[in-house]
Image (spheres, rainbow, N blue to C red):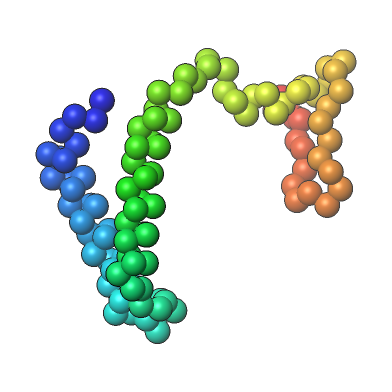
Length: 101
């Protein structure tokens, strides 16, 4: 599934450019980016958090996905049906348009 990912030069190049740009933004462009320099310990924490996301992403890929889209469960009713419609709470931005249903 992930074999050879480090042999993909484009992928490795994007990762390297991202890391370099983040370091430049934090360490050199303090006023422009409104950042504060990080200590080695803080950089270590950042790298550790980033490193944890890869195995988590790998595990998530093995979660089975049903054929029915998850968001289809939010549409409990269709306009004109006998079932009760979900009505957004007052103050919710946007409206429900049933013409296309």
